[in-house]
Figure 1 (cartoon, rainbow, N blue to C red):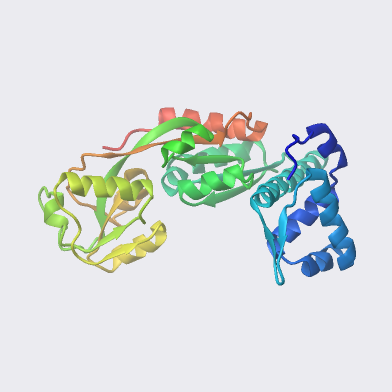
Figure 2: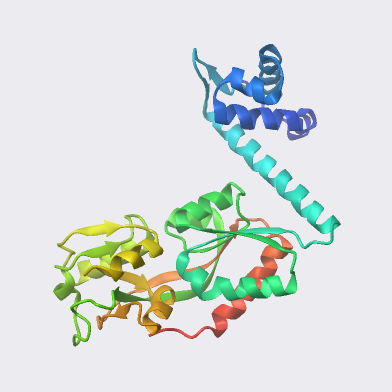
Length: 317
């Protein structure tokens, strides 16, 4: 490996789209023959492309194993960059075509479920009213996964929360609002109509919990820990509220959920809220964007709508 720094101007001048495409395919297949087939070139030609790339970077990127082309540390870094660059090019072409045809572009948004029900739906309705031809892709997942996709440029904006202190040095975060938590159950639960309860009384009930490392599970563990208690019956761990909702309907299970997510189900009688005083609120969730990078105009427009809705939204007690 050369100790001489790589010149950005010379490297960028020599790199071609074909090189990026080759790296992307080889990173997925880890096989030179398959990469050659997908590139519609001979295997010797594919070998030459790889050698050209390594010559440009002045470093070996892959270990040549009998059955695998295994990327080394520099190779993994180059693969991530190639995938992100290609994704950015595809997004540019999609938006350019939409604008040329009189449309209003594409926007990919990731959101946690609570924010999706409380703020994102009305914000999206207003965006589509303003821009009827907008193509908006929505991904609902945990904050950790969404932030990873944001870094990979698979999405443009995240409505979520920071779950790790190290993320504050990696992304730009703007809080929107907090979320009170409710203990909910199915409408036929035996504790329906019970007077005030405490968590210690509910420890023997089966619970539907969020998986470890999620923000809500961490808060749940802290709440039970403060009450010197812990769920002792069987439990189910899931990030899917729809699955949790179905389980609650036909069982005696309980679940700790954001009020913004379950409020409408309680109002319609599909769930009940148990009278349990919860000493904690979920950490604020907010707008997460790439650090040091101005969001695209469509993302900024949606962010402005979300800020307005968050300021006008009532706080559930």
